[in-house]
Image 1 (tube, rainbow, N blue to C red):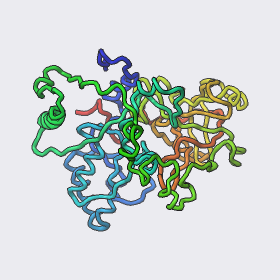
Image 2: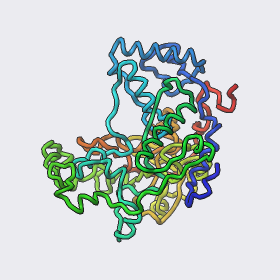
Image 3: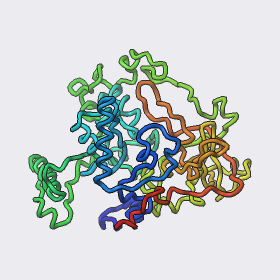
Length: 431
């Protein structure tokens, strides 16, 4: 994969893509868990452990249609959860969640989810604070404006350059083939821009050229600049029309874990908590620099950062020495919820008492380990609490946890995440 020649800073994550095209884990055919195929739906001890059975498309579609009809008949459409949450072709033609929702709507609907894991708390709280979440998430102040007017940026969660916003889409065929849809979508997009006075080539011209460079937007933009210029003429969509650091609306909910004003609430897990006596290290489960979430974890960039095939955990040399851990050792990171294996990287970039293990290593559980649930690949989800940020926002708290770390002694468990699911053939072996 070659970056565009005019890209001033191409993402190194592009190198993850080529290996994913024919990676052994890429599913090439429909497959059904053997226990479900032979015993039907319902709880089963083999779930997550047993092999799959590959089927042809007609048989797989018939099974799916029959199961959807059974659930609708016995429980109603509200028993169908329209999930498939994720980044599959996000913002483009085959956005998985939009396609699934449109399909389920044709058979009577489904139970969906509100907001998103990615935006979490911000989607719920920002409307109470500034009247709109979209205004902040989609039209923040431009970088030139920030550079020229800012001495210090305080970022909660960081500002990863590899993350960009996209807008989901999704369509059915409506009698069009792939090129027909490209022409149709381009025509609608072109008409919108032409209507705004922007000269856009026809689809044929665009297709022949291979690209179309959008005109540059304004170099300087300040969030809420009209409001700042004249708050009375341009009020925000809050009850007061102002930025509400104190929200009477939020306060009226009476939630003990989400007051209507800024307040210190002691975290359940931090180095000042009683359980730090047992698990004395504060884990930060950050976004990885080698991939986006868990996407393309089998790619070259992501794999190059592994240690003994496991995700790397960063630890201060003082904490490592106290535990007999050297750089490159495989360690067990654990607490009362579970544990995972990771490769130790010693660095004084972290403060003592803090360790860092990125999210997104493909989950590879080891059954029946005496210490409890154990991911041998280094996924920190086994360590973090499955609770919401507050009763109001219901965001994710999966970034922090108290843990202990010990050097792994003995034979390392095998890794299975790089192989095809049991019973399936890899993409490279497809007919």
